[in-house]
Image 1: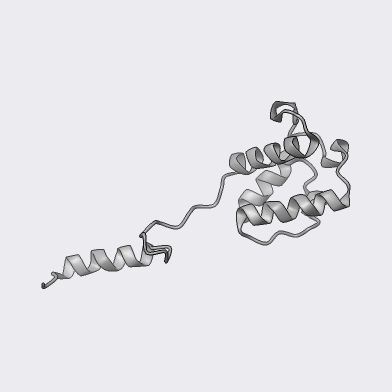
Image 2 (image 1 turned 135 degrees about the horizontal axis):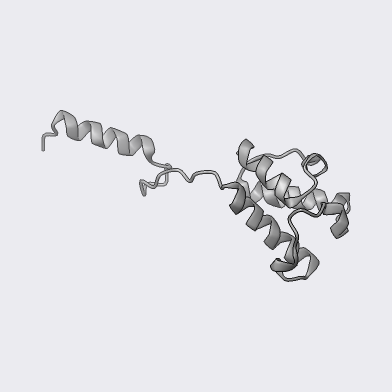
Length: 108
């Protein structure tokens, strides 16, 4: 079977866009600030055993009773979800869910 030049270019483009799993899926785009905020709200609701709609994204993490150990745990779990490394002290620089989500979305 012979391929024309344009067909080879199409094959090359598909190969370059593949994520390497053989399925040809395009790489996943980083989550938006809203998606990160949603993840953080769910995380906090589960941690605090409250409903997600009870989590106020403008209240500082320390007002929810998060100590340094819980902050490091949250950061680690967020790293796992984002598949990227984050500074463990990030929550001190961005002390609310809203601020942290916006910052992480910019960095991702």
